[in-house]
Image (cartoon, rainbow, N blue to C red; front, side, top):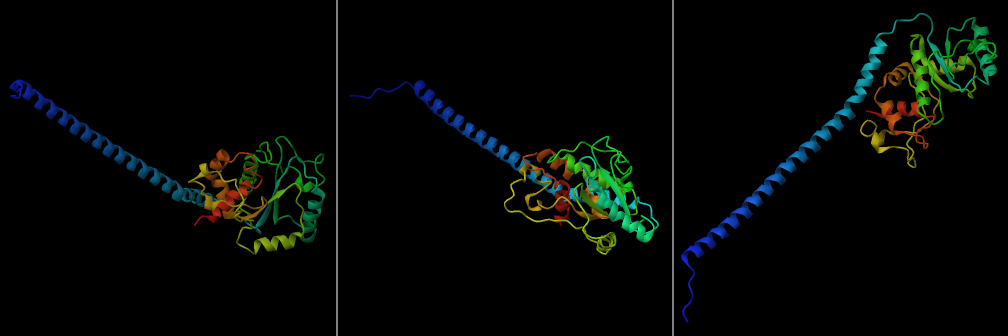
Length: 283
């Protein structure tokens, strides 16, 4: 039986349809490939810029703090007389152990006839005044800071109060050592022993260690504060002037610390000590 032939026009139309379909598939394939390529380039570029930004933030923020501290140090006028130890008290209200500190300071004055080797600064609740009605020691009269904040335990306000104490004490160029104290601290040695011990060393005395069980680090603080720079330690410390200047000049670490360390109690009374520890742990 003879085969039925298609009209010539039908064969040409079929060939055109097949050719058009193949061309459409190839076009879609190459378009998809171009989209993937362009997207990949943008992703790589974004990742590169993000890494660069993190590196710059991690590498340069300490330089900014150190520069500010150096500028503050250069602006200081020379001082006459012996260098001083600044005793910085962080109090809730009054100082319940003021009579012990009175005996401590009085022994120094009676022995040498002056108070030239120490200075006193107190951060208390706003509006609290140290006078004859609130303290048994004249050494504390009027020694409260004019600028003070309401302090809550476990909040960043504790760090802010300690920074205010350091800032006030740094205004006197004779203050060369800075001892952070609570209203419950007491002296265990006489003044001469403590003074000579602190002045004979060029180091700050801070308790700093890595607590492997500590879970207070917030990853959101990276890269400003990296996990390997996170330290734990006692709140109360003694600093040399250059470290006190760094803590006061800092405007990078503390804001991050304040933002991401919320009371859980991630942020505890050791706040300013953590700032010092982070700074000292940097290369």
